[in-house]
Image 1 (cartoon, rainbow, N blue to C red):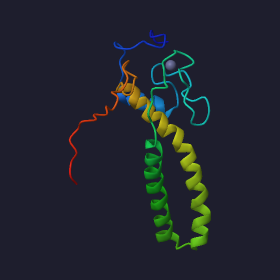
Image 2: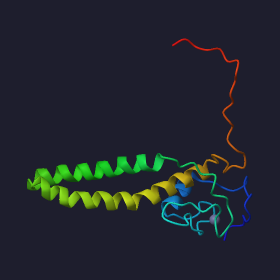
Image 3: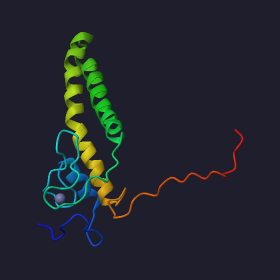
Image 4: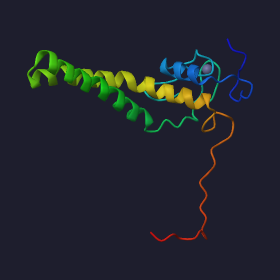
Length: 148
Ligand SMILES: [Zn+2]
């Protein structure tokens, strides 16, 4: 068990980006490698149930679906083209084969990719994982207006 306990441990902890990515891929806490990252399919625990590291700081937002679409698209389109070249299948058979594979691959990848992004954000101390909050975007009322 790692020596860091409590929700606000920080600075001296080694935060390796690759281990953060790997732990996120395995859907465990990036800090202790033991606690569950999710409380349900894609719902991130507010804090690690094992070590107490705050996980609510993550800002995965819509990045995971973009990565999942890119990965899935390359695999599925490559597979379709390869099958077409090798077997000249009926398009309906291709559709029957690749549609469920696409859905299952997407659902399998999504929590893993999201976890990897959260682990990466944790490793780089982004969005409050480093102990400070992001800078707020400031509204400057007297800013000069640009002409488009
Ligand atoms: Zn933990």
